[in-house]
Image (cartoon, rainbow, N blue to C red):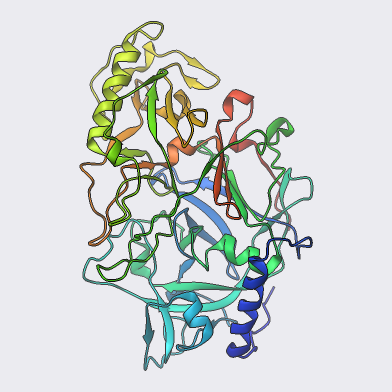
Length: 457
């Protein structure tokens, strides 16, 4: 169906957005304007990337980037007559946080404009600050997603009403490293124009979103935006109950910081205070665990674009040594075999027993802000099957605090996608806390069991 043309003057549109964002920050909003949003999350087998579906205004496949600031799409092939650029020196320009102003580009296409706001297409698989920075215009256009039914058990029975949405353009070359068929990235991070924040502002949704990544090659997981629950999966199990909660921490030094100007990170951090292997605490350099307020290094980041959890070298060596020792003892009695890259600890598959919760190996516990708040990583999330013959410990050595930015340090721990699979994660942006379930496989369900309505027509 053709979308109506956006004929609204952009000055008015600026005030429109400010009005709804003001409402979004108001604590009590009893009435919402529509059902919550939902999307299948499909794992791409070749890249291990997670892909969601949105409509801009056509169906669009986007990389799921938990810490991304906003949506961007390849505008070289963007087919819409309803988009509008955001003029420089307007309220909306200031609110969006544009990087610069594009001048004297006269071609009639989304990637061109005169005196228009530009953003940076964020591709986590292309190096930042490479000396060849590329910016593209910010747009306003119609956006929609599938919706969740009022029981929280079926997604995709209908699509949301198209609503005006801010996003960034990109170019074909910005797609390098992304999965086949993906035309951009969907940012869910801590910014004023991420998907959860914009949707909450416009529809008066609760400022919540949730992810349940599936490890299945054929069946998707699910992303939910604008609902506290219920989230009913297979056997009608509501994964919003019970959850453990830990604060979401702000890293004050993001990747766009400079020595004389710190910009907060859009990514989500949590406070891991210790790590246990098979119930025993391992000795860690405690100075690596908090976030350094000076350069943003340290701490524990959540990432859907890193396939396996990355540990700073000293943490990695300590954890893997403890794991090998525990796995060699009763009742596991496992002996390592030749490792397979990128992993360094592997075991013969024939020697590893399995249960509903995956391979029977020592549990790895991430202890949060209190000793009784623990993210337990069982075999289904700690181990990776490599071919038919080997199970490997799915953690990798990140080096000695390597830098991905000239001015901002890297985290000491990055919890990757594999460790999140079949774990339910709820991001409460009102109280700035993370609710997490640990593996739901032990409850007899999985992230692949959420029901999406069959497509019709």
